[in-house]
Amino acid sequence: MTNSSSLDDLAIFHMVVREGGFRAAARRLGLAPSKVSNTVGRMEASLGVPLLRRTTRSVSTTDAGRTLADRIGPLIAGLDAARAEAAEGADRVRGRLKLNVPGAVMPDVLPPILAAFHAHHPEVEVEIVVENGLVDIVAAGCDAGIRYDDILAQDMVSVPVGPRMQQIALAAAPDYLRAHGTPAAPRDLTEHQAIRYRLSDGPLLPWQLVEDGRTITVEPIPRLILGVNAIDTGLTFARAGIGIIATFRNWLERDFAAGTLIPVLPDRWPARTGPRLYYPSRHAPRPLRAFIEMCRDQDKS
Image 1 (cartoon, helix red, strand yellow):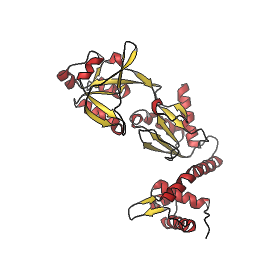
Image 2 (cartoon, helix red, strand yellow):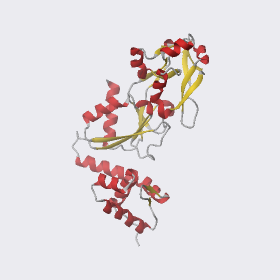
Image 3 (cartoon, one colour):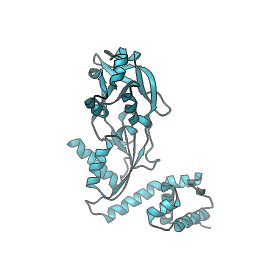
Image 4 (cartoon, helix red, strand yellow):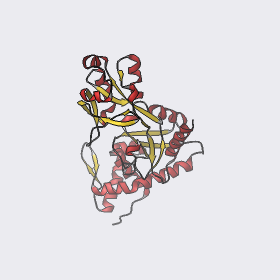
C-alpha cells in the first residue's frame, strides 16, 4: 500500500474541507460528487487513516485530516496563484480573496473599498469572515486581515485601509437627555447610564475623553452591555433612549443630522488611527496584491 497522493487528489480533499462538504466542493470544482467522494476515500485507504467524519448532515475533519489540510493549504494557494498568473495577462486579475475583518469596518468602511476593487477587478471573488479578536490569518485560511493598531499582529506587513483617522463620539437620544440631563463635563458621565461593548471573553471597551490636553478614562453606569460582534446594533438601542453610547463618529452623522441622536461632550471626543490591512510578508497571491495596491493608491490620493 502506498501513501502517495497526487496534487489533484490533495486539491480535491482541501476543497472539501474548505467548502464543508462533498457537494459544495464538487460544484466549486465542476466535478461529480461521487468523484470527489471516491477521491477522498482512495486517499484515506492509501494513507491508512480516516481524514473526514461523515454524517448525513455534515462533514468534519479528523485530527489527521485537519493536520493535512493545514499543511497543504498554503501550498495549494501558492500553486493556484502561480497558475492564475501564468494564464492571465499583466492587467487581468482573477481568483479569490478571503479577508478576515472586525465588525467595526462592515457598515461603512469596507463597502466603498470593495465596490472600487470590484470595479477594477470584476473577476475576483471576495469572501469576508467577520471576527473581532486577533486572528492567525494563515491558520484561518485567509489571505489578509483588517484590524486596528492595538490588536495588530506584530509579525505582519500592514498598510492603511479606509479612513486614516477616526473619532470616537458620544451620543444619546433626545428623550434620554430630557429625562437625565446633558453631561457638562467628563466627570458627569459617572452618573449616567451607558451602552457599553465587551470584547470576546474580555473587558469592557474603555470610554476615553480628552481633558486639559490629556486622555482620561471615565466609567459610566453600564445599563446595557453588548458583545463587539453586535457592534453595529448599538445605535438602535441608543435611539430607544436606553443610555449614552460611545462609537465611531462616522456612524453617527445621519442621526445627528436627523436629530434622532444628540452629540454629548463633542469638544472632548478623542481621535484614533484608522484600520489597517495586514498580511504575511511572504509572496501574496495576485488578488491580494491588487487589493494592497489599491489601498496604497488610496493612501496617496
